Length: 323
Image (cartoon, rainbow, N blue to C red):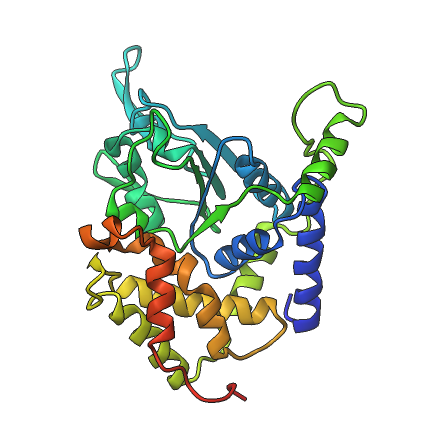
């Protein structure tokens, strides 16, 4: 995986395999790949029935490794995710039962249907890449990623994600309703020789194994970032902390996330350097879920996207592309 052109070919194959099950939404697929290449976690939001879980499962199959899926529900307990220490009554010894989070790709389906106490079970795993059980730290497999789906908060039975957890998601991608032609293609594929209502994943092939994927991710981390680009990303993030329309802005983790994602986008675009447009394009999906709007902004009907776009319009970018 040391050959740069070969790496780009692999990424194209991953997109192709995802396309066998997940129709259209190219920007969303790119955002998912950027998040994974940057070594982060992805939150996908959309109305029920738009294929959020399908995208995540297709992506998991395409990049190889083990994956586990947990359906989040109001009665789900933290131990159902991380595991627990259980007393064996026959031997009198305590045994460690590792939970489904011990995998390469942990799929948290409808994560906001579980209360904050259960959502918080992922804090340590997402930040430290380990789980503590009864005072002992257990490292998670490498690579480890959380791919979570959630329904919009106005839906019945949903809970808001804690700010600390939202900040741990490198990027939040939103699935819009599909265009008419894509919806027609989806209906055609589902009904073609299938009595169910789901697109099938059998046609999605595995392109990588975990070791190859780690090597690919290491190539992304070696991309250089010009100091002016770094300064630009930090200024954008810092502006969220002084904007009058924002009650709570993004912290330093937001700046780091923006640079990491910009670097991954440059790699996906076939460049070995980052340009201002990489930062610009990703500012909304990287920062929008990290801010809290002021009451005035909500009354005026301003959303997070509009606020971030306004900050971009008033933050001077470096002149010219980085050579």
